[in-house]
Image 1: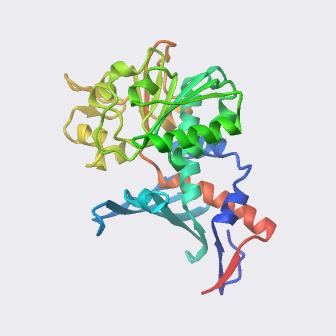
Image 2: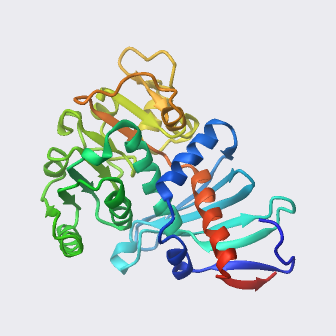
Amino acid sequence: MTGLPDDTLTYLDSADVRRLTADLPVVDLAHETLLAYARKEAGLAPEAALRWTTGSGAAARSLILPGWSGDSYGCKIINASLGNHLLGLPRAAGLIVLYDPETARPVCIMEGGRISALRTAGVSIAAVRAVRDTAGIRRVAFLGCGRQAEVHRELLATACPGVEELYLYDQDPARAGELAAVWRAADPAVSVTAVPEPRDAVERAELTIAVTTTTEPYVELDWVPAGGTFVNVSLDDAAESLLLGCDHLFVDDWDLVVDDDHRLLGVLARAGRVTGPGACAPGDGRAVDAALPTLLSGGYHRCVGDRERVVINPFGMGVQDIAVAAAVFERARALGVGVPLAR
């Protein structure tokens, strides 16, 4: 990232980022970054969180996630308000700042919402690819019908080309119906059904992607069919019975789980009912089976059976945002894209 004029930095707006990520191999990049993390060639620092209640009573927060991958260093600032949908705005928005590895000066600021959504979906699919034959997946459920659902579907179209049926649930039935209509129009060969209850979606699917804003766990173990995979992207959808009773439980980073005191898995870990990979499981709880870097690097030696239930619970690692952003910035420099800003 060195070699830029010392008196300027580059700004990439949302349109720039969308163009530059159009054909970016995000799933492969997520996979490679997790392997680099396992080799200690990528890493992250403790995140900071600021939380408040807006004037309209909505929960809001700002997260700062520093990370590095190879010779790319930076941080993601990602903010969200649960009241944004009432204003016609995405729940989350943010910025990513990249640094020069030699001088530590900022060299690029880019819109971060698209990057954050892409890396999240990329990690989800890289993890699913490690435990299932994605080409054989036919039925997929989405809990939540916002931006994350759209980006996950965007990447799944390539990763799971055999999908024949999609089931959508959202607390706002109109929102689920609208997205179902959009997806039907985009690919008439795939059946898309908006369902009235979340269980209706989960029970029918081989793969469920939970991308909601809930803070109350509700998906029980017996909702997930034998052989089902549940990706707990939004972190509070899986109930205790599912987290403790599934056959295989994977996280991206155990330290992130332990440090969290808001999400159920973090609460269970802090209470001693869930322990880290390789640790002795408590009598009424369980141990996490493996972290994703271990799983993807071939270090997980238990077979995942065709009838076994899998839960993937990625808390979100800032290192993934930096890796994707660095690839976007590299393209921007090669193509001369972006606005130079005076320091």
